[in-house]
Length: 451
Image (cartoon, rainbow, N blue to C red; front, side, top):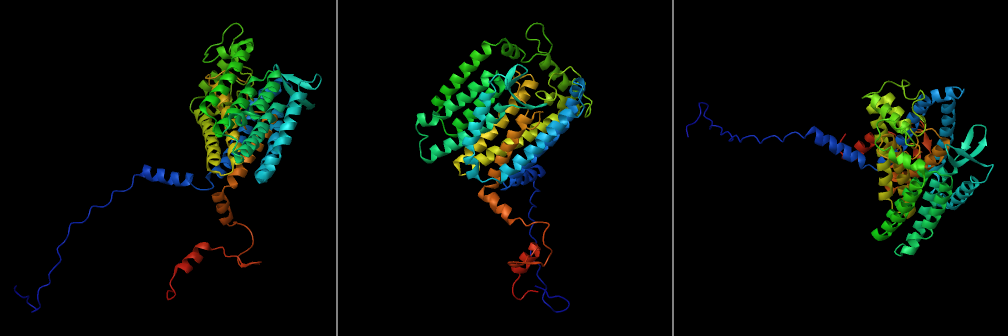
C-alpha cells in the first residue's frame, strides 16, 4: 500500500453502514387512546367521575329547572323563580346528605339499612290513610308537610331497598347461603313485593318499575341462576301486563309510543308529541337558554318528567348529548366500584344504586324520545322534585364513600399532599414538612461523589 506524503500510513476509514430506518412516529390517535386508557385505570378515576359527574348534572338541572318552570309558575300566579328556589333548597339539603353519606363508614351504612326500610314502609302505608295522603296527577303517593311542601315516600323506598337488600345479600353470602334458591329469594322478594304493593295502591307504575329493576339488579349480582331469574322476571312481567291491561290510562300511554301527531280519543298523545316537537326544534345547538316555545303551555310537566325535552329545545343536540355523557360516566363509575371491591355489601349497594339511577334515566329519556311509554318518573338529579333529589343525592354519597374506600384509592388519597397549609419549613410533630418532592427525589438519586 503506498504511503502518504507525510510519511505516515494512510488512515483507513471505517466502512459506512447504511443508516437504520427511523422508527415511524406513533399514531396520534393511538397515543391519545393510550393516555386515555391510563387515565381510566387510575385509582381515583371512579371517585372523580362520580363526584364531578353528579355535581355537573345537579348544577345543569338547576339551570334547566329555572328556565323550564318560569312560565308554569307565572300561570299559577307565583313568582317566576318559585320552583327554582324550592329545588335549590332541596339541593342544598341534599348536598349535606351527600357529604354525610360520603364520610360515613360502611358499618354505619349497614346499620342504617333496617331503620330506613322500616321508616319507608311506615310512611308508604301512611300515604293510604284518608286525610294524610294526597293525590297528585291521579297518584295517591304524597304526604303534605304544610304549605307548598310535599313528600313522596316511595322515592325513599328505592334507597331502603338498595341498603337493606345489599346488607341482606352480603350477610347470606358471608354464610355461603346464596347457593340455595330459597335463601336467595326469601325474604328479598317478599319484602320487595310488599314495597311494590304499597306503591301500586297509589297507582304509581313508574316507581314500581324502578323498584323491580333494583330487585333484578340485586338478584343478578348475587348470581341467580337463569331459571330462577327467568321465573321472577316472568311473574313480574305477568303482573305488569295485568296492571297495564286493566288500566285505560296505561293502555293509552302504551299506544303513544312512536307517535308523531296528536290523536283523538283516550290516547291523545299530546305530551309525547310535543316532547318530540321540542327536541326537533332544538337543532344542533338549540334556540338558546330560556328561549323554549313548548314550555309556554304546550308541553305538560316541562320542568319535571319532560325537562329533557326542554333541554333539547334550548341547548340542542349538544346539550342532550352532554347530559347523556354525564349519566354514562356516572353509570360506568358505579359499575367499576362494584366490580373492583372485595366487600360484598359494597358490591351489592353500588350495583343497586347504579341500576336505580341508570334504569330511571333510561326510562325517562326513552319516554321523551318516544321509544318507551310515559312512566311518570323524573330524570335523576336533573328534574324538579325534592322528594326524588334527596334520596338520590344520599345514594351518590354512598358511591363516593365506596369509591374512596378502595385500597388503591385510599393509598392515592393518602399520598396526595395539600396545596395549602403550613408554610414551608414549619415544624410539626415529625419535623419540617418537605414540599418539593421532585427535588428531594433528584437528590436521593445522585451518587455520593456527584455535586
